[in-house]
Length: 460
Image (tube, rainbow, N blue to C red; front, side):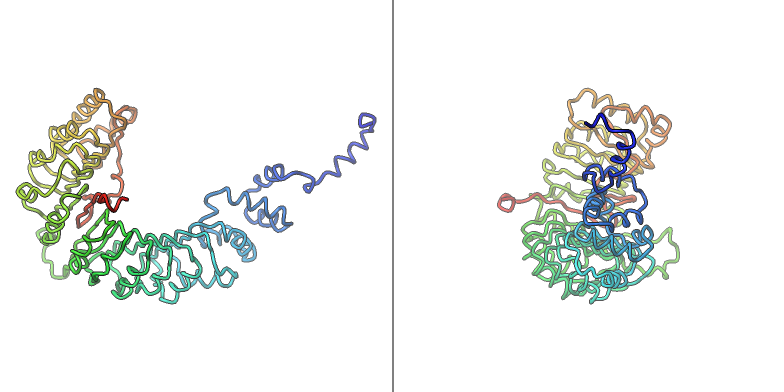
């Protein structure tokens, strides 16, 4: 008899409908239109059902799963709202990020809010270039309890290294900062983490200027360590043991620069080069058959003209990465490398004499080439771009060629005809730098890099 209801009766029925009568999907559509975070908190506090729906909405936003305490404090200025949100999302956070914040203050605030553990966090980044609030050993110990399942830790502040080995599942540890630190990790704690962190794959213990850190033969016992970044001084103490590491894929070495700048009379004439090539040559000798990538900053570590030609260390048919930066050799010097048919990344950044013809020789001989870095090469010009596109249009390549052109002879042409070059089918012009390379005049700043292929027995 619904059709016989009066208008008044229908109005009474409609007015009886409330939010509680709506299904979860309808409520979700309503709640997602609430943009004010404090208002969202008030809705979530109403009942368990509303909390569940609001939590589902919070989970959907990737930014809500990154814990940046200062950010959330600004959004939720009332401490009760902040605590409610952090408690509700405690098991949903996957990243903790502290930028110019004090770790001890962060830990204290977590404790005051009753948050003893954030189990889902696998990544933690601590960057402090302003506060100079260095973590104490007890702070690191507390952090191991707060983030028991951490896999990635990046710290640019000085630490002794004590308690780092208590991050049982740690896979990556990054301790490098592009400035001098007050102190380095202590050798005994470095050795402790090498022996105890059985999942550690990536370790960066570089120090910007001069390192006094030493390695022990125990480094050879690191069964899963694949990437090692360290200073040359540190490498010297255990070079042969490093080369014995069963899973080593990537070795990045920073040359130690022990310079008394107060004694420099003329900065323009001072020789900043670091003439230490013994370890570099030794690695070439010992690992020549497995080297698939090589990068070197020839400004800081000058090599003789025939450093590889006479010794025939490199197996050019295997190389996938070649980066010879800050090179002042004649352009025909590079001809010896133009038959690398597996080469994927070629970086000749700041090669003062590099010319168009040499680049084309590489391109024609390297069908796998995907990244070409000729930044700061002033001798190349716009006709190179025309030659590259014409050549690639006749080839059957499955990928575009990324050309990095910053401050090179190509830059005026690219800026003048940006619409034309951005629409090209075969090339992609990038003002940035290739993947995994350092910013500046060299692919690897003040040092060298080796990439190794896995041995057959280790790949199994």
